[in-house]
Length: 174
Image (cartoon, rainbow, N blue to C red; front, side, top):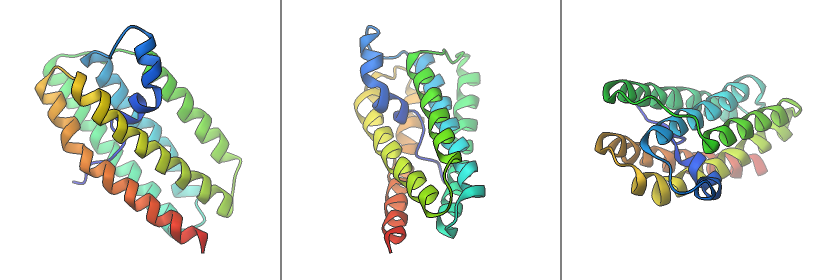
């Protein structure tokens, strides 16, 4: 199974200043919640792209985001259960959820090529933020080695999703 690029990093990269303002890096329980929330944000947007996208590439990309991010959430949830870690809500995951809802609301008001462009632009920015968060916050601050290994394992998929979204963006210009 191909693992998705919107694990936890999106949340942390995008909202890193918020976490640091709250007194430091997130703990493993917070990171687990961020992972699930970040994936759900991309699942929700992907479902919308599957139905509202006008380009076959955008629809297929949305479907891939749903599949991949659902897979990561299943892995993260299984790991949390195994480790007996209860994901802990936190300002970063709350900000991710709110930002995701705002993005979906914005996208719902668009159609045709305007929808496709806005969705792909958001996916590029989101995956760039995820990669930054993985590298700068999540991996360095995750204490549990199994959770850290999962984050490291999914990183190449984030890179692949980012490159795929950029390729779609360039084809939308034409």
